[in-house]
Image (cartoon, rainbow, N blue to C red; front, side):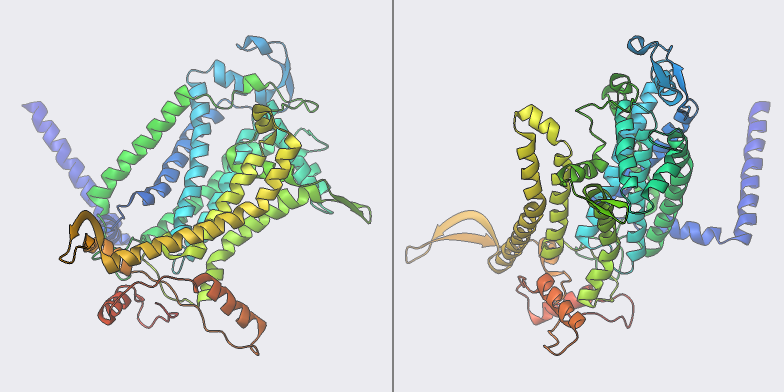
Length: 547
């Protein structure tokens, strides 16, 4: 009885202390208002919106496993004889970085599991960011008012690539050393200042003695700090601007429909986080990755034929292999175009296009409206075609990065394979764009026929004159809403031959983007309702012409 009374008094005091702390905080900050708004926030229920959460939880796994690894890793290139548990390398002269990684893999309890979970989490993190950005691009979720979040996402993707490169370069094995040798050549290819930058970063001529220590600081301090800051900014903007949503009954450009944060979204998100951690743990336990003991320590005059970087930087390797050897010597400065163009100019143009695309699409449409409904990819054939063309272009470069392995496995000429990839580098994206655009327009025509004729039932009947016909039924109300409630700009009017060049170019691009279209069969009343559901939620907002 005495124990129960003490327990009750302790619980009462705890509740009272918590209430007082809450009152103190609420009087000095809008705790109640913010908590109420956050708990009531509507979240989307479509599976594609979970891609960003997978990236978030894989990053959390990266931070946790990486914190464990930093307790044992020594980022030093000082050489020492290996005396660890792995017999085949015992007595070999290796760097402290390589030695500590082997010690972590074979002699620290759970060390190999943490290493492999860390590596798998890095691959999932980059892949989830890429898939999340593709979802945003194909659905038009980068448009006003979410342009800033698009810039944040592109920057996060760039930082994730840098973080991954720094991470797999740290063990100083033969594979990572080969990657650093390539990176050294890329830095040196920058005209005028390249040699100075390489000398500074590596602490002297390659292989230098400082690069691992500097990459370690960048990997565990600078880049993670920037990523955490940008993730915070991204989440704040998501909460403030709300999610986009797919078109459906009751969902318009002026509202947000979805389950609240608590308890529905909280339970779903918690389950997803446990699934992500579980999959990473299973992959780290049973799927071997980056076995540095099999590669051996890095020696500058050795390289393995089957040396391939992680997939997210494989396109750079492919671009380097496809570029012919072209060098110029101008005023005593060597221009290594065979390295500069594929490894510096090409990725710079890629990210420049990613940053500039929202402004470019807004310019050719003259669209200043806020958009909260997702576009279906088939409704924007040109944009979808460009996205698929970019994926094909990336796939060609990724395959080209393993041309030697492909040639060896299939017993074909590596030179002939290289020329095939060079042709595909130019023709593949064009063919992908044309095919994708045709498929999108065909899907639009199919939907128009469904709206006009209805869905086939499979039932055939004979009319009085003896003719055979098939029965059709009306399209489901939800599908009809998705088919009709869409926001497709009309092409801009041509300003005439005397207009400035930029105006004529803008009109030509607008006609290319939105000139070829399949209009849905609608009545005047339906067009009025569609305009209301897709109208600008901001009063007085201007808009470009719409269908």
